[in-house]
Image (cartoon, rainbow, N blue to C red; front, side):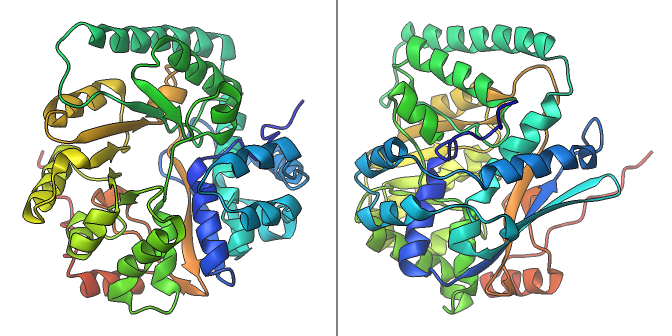
Amino acid sequence: MQPIISSLLDIDLYKFTMWQAMLHRHPQTQAHYEFVCRNTPAFPLAELLPEVEAELDALCQLSFAKDELDYLGSLRFIKSDFIDFLRIFRFQRAFIEARAEGDTLHVVAHGPQVHVMGFEIYVLAIVNELYFRRFDAAAALREGRERLAHKVEQLKAMAGPAQRRHPFEMFDFGVRRRFSGAWQREVVQRFATETPQWFKGTSNVLLARDLQIVPIGTMAHEYLQSYQALGVRLRDFQNAALEDWVQEYRGDLGIALTDTVGMEAFLKDFDLYFAKLFDGLRHDSGDPFAWGEKALAHYQRLRIDAHSKRLVFSDGLDLDSALALYHRFADRIQLGFGIGTRLTNDMGLTPLNIVMKLTHANGQPVAKISDSPGKTLCTDETYLAYLRQVFGIPDPVPASPTNH
């Protein structure tokens, strides 16, 4: 059977944009990434270990083909020296380990960050596809196509009502938790063909190239988290990360991620300088309506015309929640909606909630303090408490016991 990953372009665009920035500015950084499943699968993921090992072996045999490098090089923000690096790049099998511990599947990538940061998306796509192969594919595809048809009709129905000041724009962000690579291609192709007025791109670089649509993405949490361990004063890590991004991309890729240590702490750092330089903000945790109001109030305080900026929502969206957010904000600011799992794995089966996150850089812990408590990630409670103290973030309130 053909390996799940057959092209190194089958990955989110923001991996390349973060990869280039780290190669240019902090190429010596050592990094440690760990795979985590946040929900209970239908069968132990440890059962997939032999297949995961084989897929990792195949992944580490791949290199970038000339036509793939030509496509990446055609993106104006990708530099020629990064293309030269990718021309000789190959994943090293020694930098990634998969093992089983009871029912739990462990995957750990450790080594130079510019050699291991790319593993994340491929690992998640591999585990997902191997997992869902054990279910009834024909039944899942029948259900998936029915649901896809309904989404397409939902979008087409938007042509009737009076439009808001800013248009509805939707993107596919579904590589990491997709049912399969073939299904993601089918979904994206159908939206791109039938609803181009609203469907504006995909994070999947391979599909963007093949279907001639826009590749979408800027930065993820790992980029900002890395700066917690790069020698700057901890309180200044967000400023340092944003400043390096500005210097690297000079106005391109201008959507900043806000929730590495929460929206409140982010806005304290996102001053007039950054607010003018960045095109907008991306939401990835917490109440999206409250977050949007905070962002708008921040632009108003800085006397920046919100109509010149964009809010991108990408946290667990489906089409209904995206449309609700659109109706709330579309007359006040430009918008974008990145939908992942509920586009590429809406098959009537329970999706896996899997991540592969940066836990250490240069031998020291890093953390994300999410606006959604369940998404906070850190393997070192002492460091997490210190990070909260530095940014004045209160400890989460423990859940009250249920009264019976």
